[in-house]
Image (cartoon, rainbow, N blue to C red; front, side):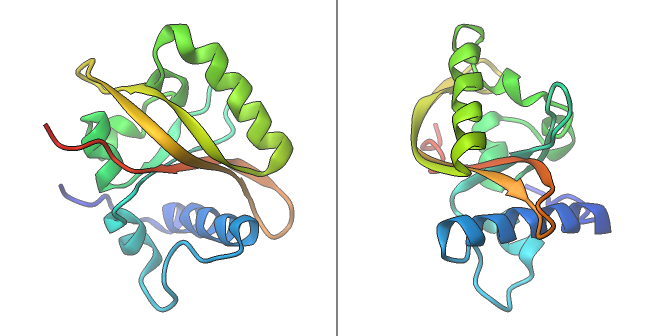
Length: 151
């Protein structure tokens, strides 16, 4: 899978993603010295992030996430994040995101997601965290989970 163009704007958002994770988890997401964008892209866990729009849109999915959702980067980054869950589970997903907003980070989510082709796949022990910059401004939320096995 071809990595996206890591524009300056995307790199800034990814820096907030990694800094927020480290601040909340107490451990770095990526080893120091690595190119952050490239390391996130190649990370073995699926990593996704959405912004703060009224209907939040994914702005990042790494290679593992795109394989799970069966989308390329351009298609994934046009997807409202609510559409990653089945219609009957979207209210549960909204309650989960509100819990993350209240706590900053959770590490115990499990659920079912749906790919672009309609394939359902389980996610378990998902880490979800708020993307908050050093000035305290909220930029969205991110999630990390073990990708489903390739079929």
